[in-house]
Image (cartoon, rainbow, N blue to C red):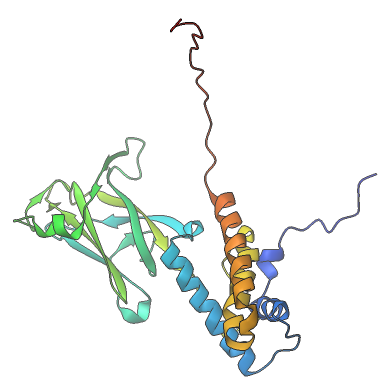
Length: 252
C-alpha cells in the first residue's frame, strides 16, 4: 500500500519572505523576529540576490524576445524599470530588467514556416570602438552590449538597411532577479533547487550583523549549498566514451 503523502510539490511557491527570514534567523540562534529585524533581513536578502547576479547563477531567468529593427538605428535600449524610461519595442511587449544579452540572431519571416535565423557575433567594446563607420547600413552581423545602472543597451553593426528593417533581431537575455519587497507574505522567484542555499546565504549575511562568531561556519555551509545547487542546475548532456586501442607488446 502506498504511503499517504501531501500530493503537492509547491513548497518553493508558497515559501514566503517572512518564513525565509525566520528560518535564517533560527540558524544563527534567534527564534523570534519582528520590526527592524525583518527590515534588515529583507535588505540582506536583496543584497544576496545582487551577489547571485554577479556570480551569473540566475539562468532560470533566461527569456527571449524579438526587436523590431529600424532602418539606420544602431542602438536599442532596455531599461531597468518603466520608471527609468521606455524600452525599445519588442515582441512580445516591451521588456524591462535586462541584466545581460546572451545571444542574438537576425530572424526573417518570424511568424511563417519559412522562418530562418542568421547568427550575430557578440563583440567587445574595443572591437566596436574600432569600427569606423558605425552607422553604415547593411545586414547586421555583430552586436555590442553595454550595461548601465538603469538600462542595458544593444548596438548592432551595421545598422539595418531597407531590406533588413522588416526583419527581427531575436535575442536571449538574462532577467534581473526580482526584489523581495515589503509584502513579506510574497514568495521569491527562486526555483526549488536554490532554496537551501538562499536560506543558508541569508543566515551567513545575518550572522555578520548579529552573531559574528558563527559567520565562518555559516559561510562554509552557504558555499557548500551553493555548489550543490549549481551542480544540479547544469544542463545534462549525453556522455560518449570512445575506447582506445591498446597494444601491450608494441615496444617489445
